[in-house]
Length: 109
Length: 120
Image (cartoon, rainbow over all chains, first blue to last red; front, side, top):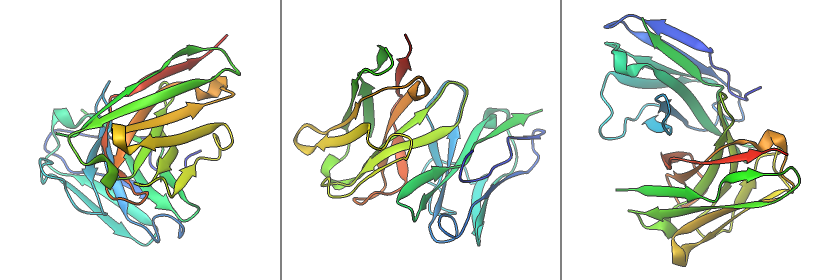
């Protein structure tokens, strides 16, 4: 059971906008920033969003992040087939541990 | 270019020990915190341990506390994970990851991982 809660799956058609949620508590998302990672099949995770809503260089602006209270969201607009991957949220917890969501498998139909 | 290369994984019997290493390059190693994160087959990401730039701050997941020890050698640009009393549930791909700052912080860059299989 992961500390952060994500839906196990999400889907959309090419060009569509999809949103993935991440729910936590006051000790993690509520008091610390959130990162999002993309894991393509058979590869290592890659940083997608940091500090709630910042994109590293090279990440398309189709990807955006937001945070409100104890929840965060990742939005992907103009969905493309290459976006099919697992997506994880992460945050530091005040119990002095790094916590992840269980991951969301995104399928592009 | 940031590069993190893990090594030391393999097949080990329950109760035995294993030491993982991570060789870092492409950044000033002693300016950043580092982490070990694992992923069991077909499962999600699980943080294992993190260490600050000067080893002054160290954290462990409850699942490995007392069995695993993280360390670093800044002179060798290397991160280590000593794993003792291994259990079947420790079977996973172990990733080395770089923190975004000197104190224990969320990871940005990840290595490709080294596979640890605990089985008799």
